[in-house]
Image (tube, rainbow over all chains, first blue to last red; front, side):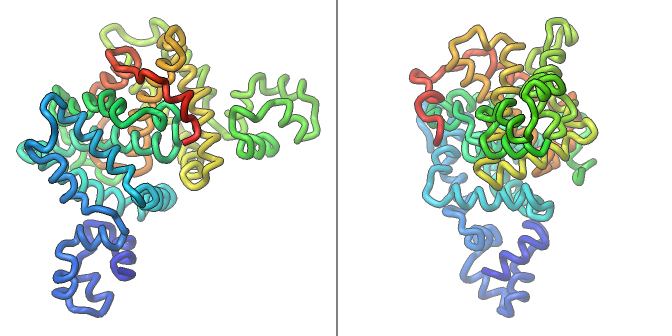
Amino acid sequence: MDAARTLFAERGYNAATIRGIAASAGVDPALVHHYYGTKEKLFAAAMRLPVVPSEYIGAALAPGAWPDGTGLGEHIVRTALTLWESPGLMETFLGLFRSAVADEQAAVMLREFVTESILGAMGRAVGLDALPAAEAQYRAGLAASQMVGLAVTRLVLKFPAVTGASVDDLARAIGPAVERYLTGEIAVPARPSSSRRTGR
Amino acid sequence: MDAARTLFAERGYNAATIRGIAASAGVDPALVHHYYGTKEKLFAAAMRLPVVPSEYIGAALAPGAWPDGTGLGEHIVRTALTLWESPGLMETFLGLFRSAVADEQAAVMLREFVTESILGAMGRAVGLDALPAAEAQYRAGLAASQMVGLAVTRLVLKFPAVTGASVDDLARAIGPAVERYLTGEIAVPARPSSSRRTGR
């Protein structure tokens, strides 16, 4: 776990490998694979996440996993807000977020993890993976801009109107915006900037 | 300035007064009023903000201040994104935001300042002050959840799809969501939670 935390922090989520973490800990990579399975599960264990995001999101957004008459966006927002109330999750989120805000390299790790694990799973669940990569990334980025802002205003800055509203109220108010970003009419930048200027 | 920074940090934006700051600095309150005018201007000077938010927002959102055919929300997002590119502003924002994420009392100060100064000016400019207070606060809070998230994903976490997109692209994509929060069909919570649970 120490080796995993160190390598994820130093190299970021994408460049850290199970092989590298095993070498740093002086154990066989097969052992790490055996106990943790995937890099995402190893990260989740090292960071003490209460769930493995891709599993949780895959299950929550599976076809038929939500009531008829509830929009996709509303269901996504409700799922996220409900998950954020899990015991321990807020402390974990605040710890990762504080590090990311204070330190550029920690921001790289959090951004890569959110992109790969959370946005990746959400994208597959809602069919973004059928779109051109630049469009899928742009739509996921727009949705992230709303969901990250919801998390920060509700859990960190604690705006009274946002912390005081119920999960259902916020899901109904914010869900349509998230749904539009993911599946609605959005002008996708002609030259996908995500491949042009990734480091800005 | 030292006395102002200390008192804003200790008491928050709302409870700090020009009178208290003057007393702490050992000067006559009339002198502080003479040089700084309002508490907001004193705060802006103490925190080295490049603009006084209520003046900047009032001017940017004044009737006729933006081109025909551009929606209100699109204009708000474009105005914010453009302002964020001002020299020095990002460093100031990052400093305030880092403190707020690390420290509960700094979060109180930033939340109260954003609510009073930034959201207050935006609300007056778009007519929220004509609505019941609870509805005005809820709509402003929803808009804040999107705008704060845009700032955090573009300036702090630097999601490639968000940092790489142009101001115009993002204004067109995100503007309609902000406009809906401010003026569209939104179910406002029946019992306004902002007065019920302000301290959560």
